[in-house]
Length: 340
Ligand code: KG4
Ligand code: ZN
Image (cartoon, rainbow, N blue to C red; front, side, top):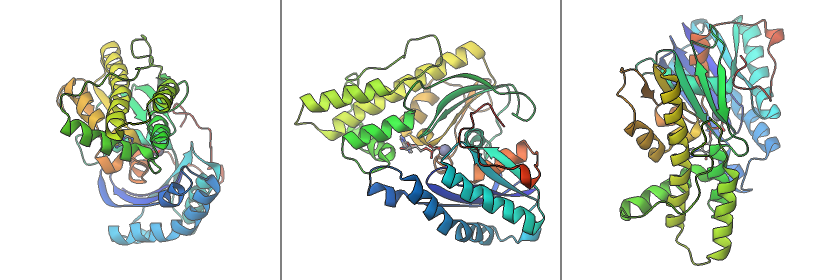
């Protein structure tokens, strides 16, 4: 089965052609991040206008790279939420139009569950029950999946009480005058610093909620600590601060992941979302977990599939195939991770 995926929930415009939920025939992503770098954050109106301009070329490119025509496509999968309303509308209305014109079924996809399915692409398939942790720019959610969400309801175990993990990286990046989005830049500076200072003690900042016996996260206090530190200490080494920040965020995520693994003893642990691209997180999480194939093993997507893309959206639709009449496909900006 060949599915054309479409993703426009935030500032990316993505289209991908995926065969049988695992073979990426193409995966095209156009980002308007450079425009947002000028303002230090996303301006929703600008993101949506850019997506409107990009969506057709991106879909055409995805079809061309995959060397497929409309006749080869079996279904359209589209992100319906959560996300920015103007951005979501671009993808949803485009997908509906293509579905009607090409006479193809359309499958609405929850963006957050879509992220989780990046772990199903190209690699050994995760088995259920699974714990999934989505750490993205807008969300931090831990869930228990007894089976694919289409077959068994997803249980929410916990999430952030304030800023999401990626949001913390981005906002602290901004305090350090790093260009938007701060996450990858902060991580790169931090990795370089730790490499050249292997003896560094990484305990400067607090690890909020690290020891609470639940799956709650809170990152806004960390941001305040960094802000206070920067106000008191003018002559700082950015590398040193970024290393401290990254270690604090990663420690908390690893601690909560370990708690979930010990409590639920699931067959697989799935890490997903943009912060899943973080090298330190990937390494530290992997250190405590069994190898792929063993019970409780860790599944992490390829780095380029952690951040927003349409390949994981098409993959979700393959494993949870439920087409909707196009008239009943809507943009749902406030969709939660437990809703289909
Ligand atoms: O999942 P995603 O692409 O978009 C949302 O659905 O939010 O996640 C984007 C987030 C941004 O906050 C970005 O700074 C963060 O993921 N991110 C990273 C890294 N790469 C992307 N954070 C830390 N380290 C990275 N290497
Ligand atoms: Zn995302």
